[in-house]
Length: 445
Image (tube, rainbow, N blue to C red; front, side, top):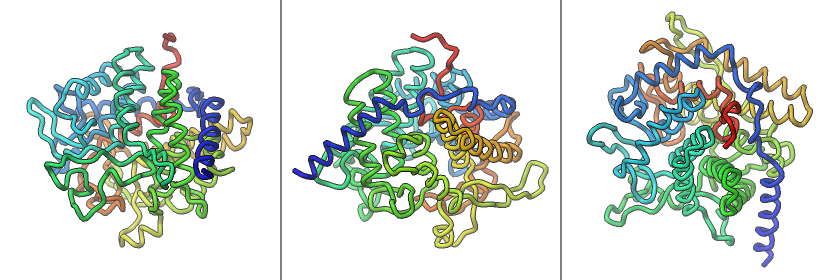
């Protein structure tokens, strides 16, 4: 009874927060967009449009690493579609999403598979279905709907959101109420289906609750509620917020854990939490949480790493690692910079600048704007010329352990995801604050 009353009370508070706060939905485009770097955005877009499957429009995730030749990772497709949309290239964004909408072979277990080689005959590379990549597809679909008014993409976004809803924990007696599972249960015909690494000794997706997935889901549910007024999305977002507060928040270090009962530091989770929740949402979790999260990232995850710039000189660049300095020591590797995750921190700085400006705290806003501009300037200065455009490798270290399942690609790779996030940062589009990516000059529907 007491536990149920607690859940009911926190849901009311969370729903009220959704009703009375736009969660950064109306962000100042003039503040976020970086007009001076528009030429960089065009060059990143050029590279993306060269390094893709010409028929489907799907991006090649890792160019230059023969192990991943012509592979398309679903999350990468979603982010590239968002980048095209942020640049006003709606036809290119539609081409990507239309492939997913119209290709039943990429769907199983209610969602989209993780990775494949596109072409006349689709070749699956990872047939697992993870909620995170699917939710980013939903965010891309909603973004296209808001920018073009095409109902097809709203329907696609809702299909993905309803898939995520089917994975939301509804057990109010357990510790994961409101969280979104890593994926659905597998096909019984394949015993290790939907297990980490296809290994029965490792956790099953349906039992794993990762913070980043619940943050992404919150952003999608919240924005869909704003777009449709449907109560199911409002309540789902409120329950996500409950899980983030009760099960993901590390109250001792004032940051997000990687997942339920998993205190590992994942740097992207911190940036995404700021982008999706903003100052008000994070204040609901803990008063002053937004600045405390940034302080944690800057103290523990910001690093310097050597990088060979286009003129072959080696320079030290500053950005975020995939994890914190303590974990880096445990991994027995030097610090490295993730270009993708550093651009996500840049977007988080933009979100904080906007929020504090709206709160009338202009000095704080200016501090975060300066931090954003400094990081952005030094990353753009080391972009690599290739294919008539610009790109980044996946990280500053090759074939190195990230600390979250995978290793970085081999030396010489250029990865789609860094350039796509660069476009989003330059254009002032933060996908987890969906309305920041809406063209304000477009007539309302």
